[in-house]
Length: 173
Image (tube, rainbow, N blue to C red; front, side):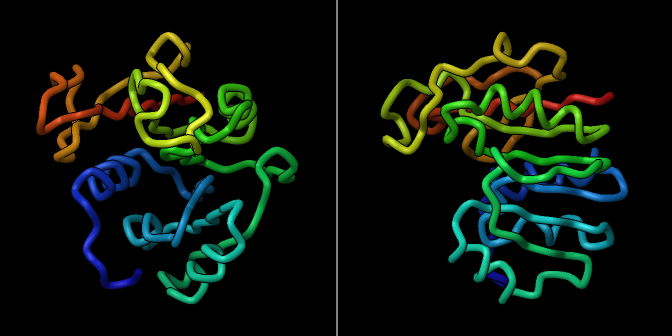
């Protein structure tokens, strides 16, 4: 919610996104809209499949440039955007890899994160795609985010403090 602290991994990825974002932004899977606070001076549209969380996002009044909508991205009529963000949403969709390719047609820059090499069941049954790694995303530039929120050019070792890295991808037309 507005005013609540943001976990380091989440704030890091949105700060990273802000540094790569163009003039207008579409975020797929925006949740409560907390990511919009990292892009306060840019028109921002957030989409989420959950109508209740979209209502919560609208109630937060993040910035005057924000809009939040309930939508199914399989049927949403996409316009053109400078930047599309899909942070930890692709793995929730049976057709997530196809959706990511479709999104390229509607933006100049596409930013995404997914759990890297996530084994089935690691985050629960709501994740449909597992074992995702760089080979699944041709044409993207990659970096990695560990559990503490540090971005690096190589994945951090898996251990008790870092159970899973996020793969962060950037594509530019």
